[in-house]
Amino acid sequence: MSAAPATTVIKAKAVIDGISDKALEHAAVIVEGDTIKEVVQGDFSDLPSGPHVRTLDHSDAYLLPGLVDVHTHLIFGVYGSSYEEVMENDSDQIMLLRAAKNALTHLHAGVTTMRENGARNRVTFDLKEGARRGYATTPRLFLCGRPVTLTGGHFFWCNQEADGVDGVRAAVRELVKDGADHIKIMASGGGTAITDNRKTSYSVEELQAIVDEAHNFGKLTTAHCLATQSLVNALDAGVDMIEHAGFIEPDGSYKFDEAIANRIAEQGVYVSPTVQTGYRQREVLQGRELERPLNSEEQGRLDGLKAKCESQLEFLGRMWTECGIQIISGTDAIQIFGDYCLGLELMAEAGMSNMDVIRASTSVASTSIGAGDIFGSLAPGMGADMIVVNKDPLEDIRALRSMTMVMRAGEQIV
Image 1 (tube, rainbow, N blue to C red):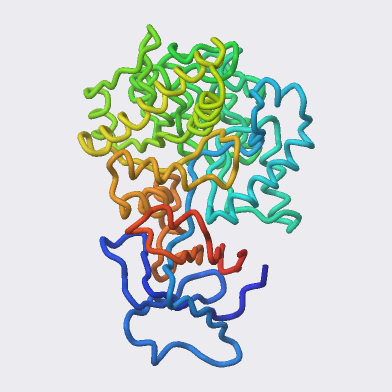
Image 2: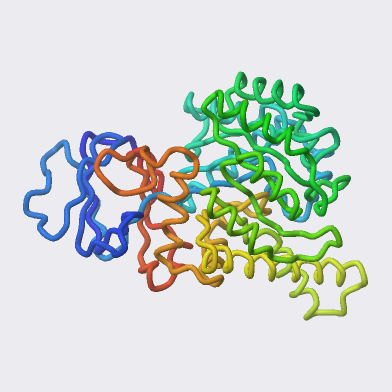
């Protein structure tokens, strides 16, 4: 890792800037300090030179904005362990150490910005402060701190339980005081053992109070919504973003509701479908199935994961192609950090073009978290967050699995 010189010139075979419909062939980006000064195409004769200029020649490679993961849980990433096992076995100090490791792993995979959607107590607040002091190297961090959840609700062990209109307003104020950049709301049950993902959590009135209080402080909101009715409640309350969009019916079935999806689009609400959750666990069970017959518990888990993964792909494809919903890329509580590109590959499989996938993980993602004028595209005045890959991701999105260079705020990390 090296400190940013006064001026850096990065040459590339092509620049994919995160906003244009086509790549800029034979282009270069000029960086001053931590900010992009200029994007030059075609003629390199007038590029800056001299002892104060560092030139990075990637003339056979592809330059893109740094990737944005809008949904992470840095305290996890413990392969094979349930939420409850992690909560029981690990102290906040161990979680902080793991969060720092996970953040750096994701950064090396090209993720220069993370929107962190829920950790216990002050773990992620402490990580961000540690990064500010230079104790850890992380992506840019946008934090909710602790998710707002009802008593005994999903992620209740993060310790921001709140009930009733007055209670949820107080919770938002406490989180803002602690340094929250946005407010995460658990609008339905989830993977927490004592909750039910078929059922809603908060009433519309409680959700409206959270959104109102967050907006009073200039903070955006995002709502975890697996149950179909929780989507309706979140839309009634005016949330800014929806996580998962599970469309889980009261009987546990997955059923896409076009009317609700159209409403999401009409209200301009972003959706982070977290399409890769469950995928790796399904892979493990399918591999085990090839070696021996699964027992009844394993078979039940595999059947459930297949249904979940298949519905995620179907719903993402329909939200994008039929309804025009603004889709953005987020991983969720994955068990292997650095596996970000899997979600991009699945987005392409669901019907998004590679360019649309890139925008969903750069400029559209940064806009969705209120930072579209700070980073997420390669344009003058934007923060110098960039990645270089050897192969063309417009031809094969899997090119984003291997980073030749990662730069965050003008500082070369890889």
